[in-house]
Length: 290
Image (cartoon, rainbow, N blue to C red; front, side, top):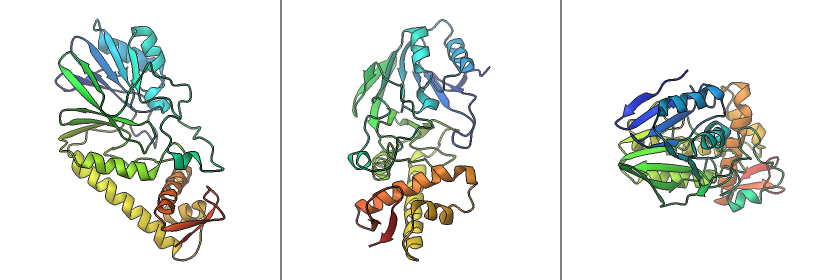
C-alpha cells in the first residue's frame, strides 16, 4: 500500500497505482493540513488508494475534497471518499461544464469517452477567484480551461497545484471537444504572469521552476503549430494525415491522443484565420493554409 510522503510542512503526497503512458507513474493525491485535512485530487476509483488515503488521515477528519478536473484518474474516487468521510466535494462542475462555444459547435466529434468522468457532480461549484480555506491555510481558485473546460488550479501563496495543466515530465493532452487549445495557451500565459516558486502537478514529480516550465510549454505549443503549418505548405491534409507525418516517431498507441492534439491546434489556427477547413470545420476536414 502507498504510504504518505511528506513533501512540505502540512502537505503530504500519495501516488495512486495507475501508471500509464498518459499518467506517468500514477495520479498524485495531495493531503493538505495538520489537524483537519483537505484532499486535492482523490484519484482513480481504486480500493487500495481509498485505503491509503484513509490510513494517511488516521484519526484526522477529512473536511474537503478538491478536484482539479473531471477525468476519472483525478475525480473517480471522490464519491466513495466523500461517503466514507462526509467531506464536501468541490470542483468547477461536471465533465461537460466549461466546454468552449467553438468546441460545442464542432460537428462530428463525440465527447472524449476514455478518461472522462461523466458521472462526476461536485457538492459545491467553484469559480475563478474563490477562496477555499482550512486551519492555517487558504487556497485561491484559478480557472484554467484548456485540458478540460472546467480545469482548476489551486494557489497556495507561491505554490501552485497545477493538475494536468502544467506537468514537468510531459506536455498536456488537449482533446476536443472538452479540450480547447486557444483556452489552454491563454491559461498558460495567465499563469506565467505570476512568480510561482514551486508546482505540484497531477502526475510526476514537483516542478521546481514553474514559470520556466510554463514558458517551455508555450514554446512547445508554438513549435507544434509551426510544424502543422509547415506540413500544410505541401498541400491540404486531414488531422489523421498530419498526425502520421508529425508524430511518426511516437508509438502508434499514442496516435489517437496525438490526433486530438493536432485537431485542437487546427481549430485554434482556424479561429486565427491561419488555416481553413474544407468543406467545414470538422475532425475529418481537409485543412489548408490561408
